[in-house]
Image (tube, rainbow, N blue to C red; front, side, top):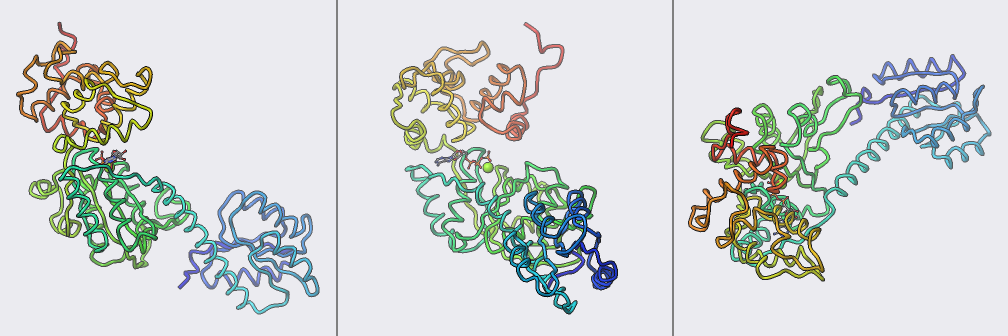
Length: 461
Ligand SMILES: Nc1ncnc2c1ncn2[C@@H]1O[C@H](COP(=O)(O)OP(=O)(O)OP(=O)(O)O)[C@@H](O)[C@H]1O
Ligand SMILES: [Mg+2]
């Protein structure tokens, strides 16, 4: 089960003859072995390179094995230490165990026995590392936010989560930016039988292709420049649990093929490795693109689309469930905050292209500006106030009273344009003001064919 080639071993013993016999044996078996003759050199090497297991003789010149062990633990080197003691020094062995050694052997001992202990130490270290990774991931996923909503559309979403959660089927979560896709993924995981196993999230939009590949599938040491140690992929980390692939529409073509293979075979190979590893995951994916259209236009593999879309859950945009807005506002305001009716009305009128996320941003901003814990019209972002049909335009380019009668798409387009103009066509700032990601903003620009004015006209009038 254990592949000796993955194990990096350091042997510290002053008895040269004995040491060489150890080195020869382990090298023959395929282990990666380094050797030193005293404790100080062992420490020096540990500072420079990563080792899985250290075999440490307790009686050595220059620095005693115990002293070295103490320092190794103090400096938090995370290799496992196996100590070798002479006959009749059981006291020292006990001391070494107290200092955090993994195990001890009394000389002389059969080499086969040492090999068994080395393998166990390696396994122990791997488990410890995986545990640590899991804890990191769980901590990241920890805040469990309650989903708010009473509208028929959201009630249907909750019903689907209850029904589909426990089925173990792959589910594609679709919806505009900020509609709560990640929250739904968490809720589906919680409603599943895997709820006590990890929910591992990977965001395809957040990483460049090569990094994304090694995040998902892991890599062996030396698989590419910078791969200084072997690393399990998120598929392995999610084993037994749920893997949530966010923004799957952004997955590059080559990785689409690799993902499909992994899902079909139920096994993966780390980059630079020939070893197949079986993984058992439940797949959830989310996108704010229209994947069916992406398939039609040849940007997303059809076979992968059917794999990930065994069931689909579509989140309605906020403007189609306005009855949820007061609930959300109330929830995010919290006591003792109040809101003026005129401000609430403006919020109700607005189209919220960035959905719940944008609403949260607007409320957070208003709370900073507000006096006496009351949100007034003037505390709301200008784009929200500006879209009240009755309000006078806040920006010279805003369409006068007509906003109310425009088609929704038109409203959204104008709104995006307005914010862009206000932010001097700085897309990062505009996206922030809209409460959407920069990527989503680019998508809106594409959708509505919005372009910055020609360079010469930019400062005109
Ligand atoms: N129904 C809801 N109740 C409470 N909070 C919500 C609800 N929907 C969304 N949120 C909150 O809105 C924010 C955006 O939600 P989330 O990140 O899940 O959206 P998303 O659809 O994944 O967006 P994107 O496509 O931009 O990644 C989060 O802070 C989330 O907690
Ligand atoms: Mg998201």
